[in-house]
Image (cartoon, rainbow, N blue to C red; front, side):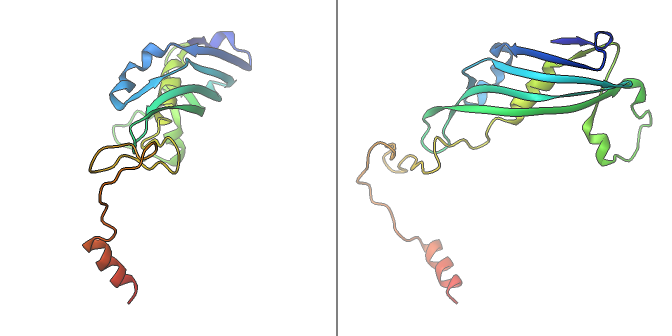
Amino acid sequence: MIIRLADIDDEFVARGEMDTSVFSDLEENHVSLASPVGFELKVRKAGDRVRIEGPIRCVMTVTCARCLDEFSYPMDGYLDVELAPSTSAPQATEFELRGDDLDIYYYEGDEIEIDPFVYDEVLLNVPTRPLCREDCAGLCQTCGKNRNYEACSCDRPVNTVLGEKLKSFLTK
């Protein structure tokens, strides 16, 4: 979605959905979108600066890191970016960044494309180690059965050599 800055007096609300085909590269990480990415962003102008903020929501289908089952993961992100014209960007080849400099993006011309910001927010909210539930038992390392659904009769070592050494270290 492209926003023309000349069309904004003080505040504008951008509502819409992004097509899920834009996120096809997520499938490499065993993630797919089960719903379109919806957003309702307030775009505010203050002089030549622009602030874009608001919720971003979708439902992802992710693979559990323990049991490899797919499950739905509702993503509720919040976009909050500040933009300044590219003419106000530092021109020096080397300069010291302050904390405030890391939160500013730059735009050129009279239009701002908000899809890249929404895309980045979705990517930042993909869980790195998704679990279908907190107490997921995972797969048996010996037979491969999903221990959430069925018990296996494989021998599980109760104590390991490393565990015994750690236990003796902690009791000293």
